[in-house]
Length: 257
Ligand code: MF3
Ligand code: CO
Ligand code: CO
Image (cartoon, rainbow, N blue to C red; front, side, top):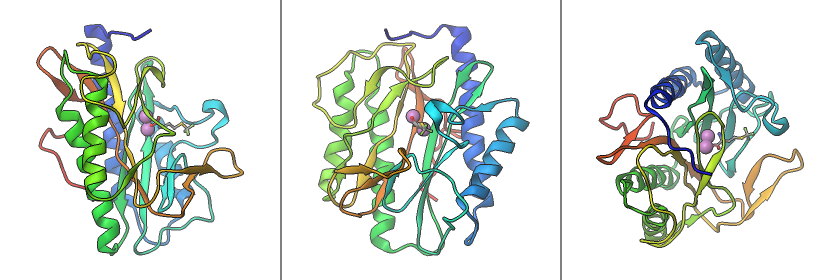
């Protein structure tokens, strides 16, 4: 069942999503070469609690940490740890999901650490473009397939692949609600988009092939061919007029870090 949010729920979503965006902004400011992903997690955990929220990934189906940190060939769901330290030239995705007053905000970005190879930087920029251009087609009467079609067109146009094993999702009082938001598809296909829907779009784009494997920890998804992978995620609200990006602090969009 797809939950159409009431005005009251939309207000609560605006607050949790604003906190999610601020959390990423706060973490970005504290990124340093040499720091461990565990330190990033600690900052995320403390910041979330200090703002009256709970990090929804912590304990989610047994996930042990307060955010996901996905480095280089990690597609998503990387587990923060003491061993992985940021190196010059890395690309690092941080995904945060505060639950505030019963509602979730979910956003992620891929950050450039130090001086990144131009080809890796290009992947990150194109992935960001996939997210932002796909958001532009969201409006009442459009179809979910329109979103995936835009993402595929941009990614394939640069010779990249779109990961199919993970998708975006409805979000609200539950972390993952219906519908699933596929990052591939055909224009005009799939469910019709309605006002009051809140969902994420979170394309994962690989420099090589789309295939994934899950490491022994049961969570970390990596590219099978070892190629780099980037991701960006926003939580959005469908309005009567079109779309509102709930996890964007300033509607004049920033480009990737
Ligand atoms: N935040 C991720 C998403 O965008 C989900 C992480 S679930 C976890 O949907 F358990 F891996 F943390
Ligand atoms: Co999500
Ligand atoms: Co997320």
